[in-house]
Length: 452
Ligand code: TRP
Image 1 (cartoon, rainbow, N blue to C red):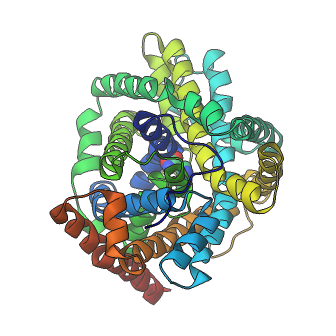
Image 2 (cartoon, rainbow, N blue to C red; image 1 turned 180 degrees about the vertical axis):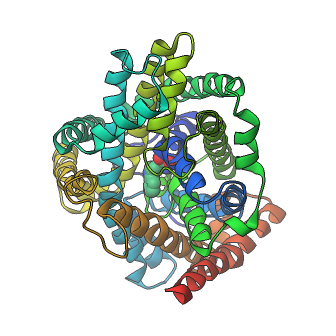
């Protein structure tokens, strides 16, 4: 019998608090900014279908596993993997999962913060009335002015990193929990308002067809890899973020239930965002494949035209910032917890150190949209490269390791006890993490490598 461990960083106050925090982590720019633009770039329906499949057969079982490892280890991912590997009589090499997660955390947050900075700057534009009766063309110009200006982006990036590290420094209950309570439901309601507007925009059916008619001739191998990577990104999987949240989870909470709640909420938000955005794209003859600027070019047009648009527009971008904020916190939490545990830093110091490193790295993303926009490797800018490397390569590899450890390296009696599933449910989970997830990830990877 293993002694129950406790996390030195604290614990969630309840099951509900965990579900909110994990949902806060999952729902973010990935759903509202990224999902629409990668769907647009990859041709719509078929991509969406592959993405949904990845969520169901890879995302859900990996999320259950990641939470389980966290709750059992009760430490930062690096130390959790060390403890659990030892406990199962396995090699200390499994710690690499934790280390790659730390690296991924720095890299992901570095660009995430820059995009969140765009959202911050849009709050100010919205409240100032910039979007009132705006044309699609003018909206595109405004976005262009923002990304071509390094100084302005640097300012917002700095502000966003500042507020993120402020909350992280305050710790689990004080900081993380309080930030998500109200904001998630509010964001949800506002998305419904936007979908309501989109229904009357003239492009609604075209948008719905684009999202849900699966034409498989439009999807490429790369598209499949992007869908898989995004399943990890949007559920915050594969780098220890959900693992560390799991390590603050009380013992008596059902991991399966919590996972389903989070995965469903996350998927619904992404689909709502798609249904809000694509009708506007088509009604205004915009380009679905416009790239990272897609929501920033389309949504102002909707707010500019709708009654009460100033209010709704301002509120929307505020909530988007909050969604990004509650996600950003989780991206850096594994790093901070590790610095506290293993480097003997105070939480505050660890937050400052990791925040500064991330902030510095973020400057590369800022510049990749302007001064360094011609600097390309494999035909990708620095931002594209960072995103591709972390989302499509590091996260699926991390997920693969999580699945293999939970499915093969851990004793059945251990995983069964943690998951608290009945025999049939446990069997399904086991087949998914042992075979389906690893095979899916490897097949997608090998296909990709063949093409290079
Ligand atoms: N899931 C978040 C989003 O969709 C981003 C995020 C938070 C994340 N934590 C993560 C992505 C950990 C990858 C890994 O916006």
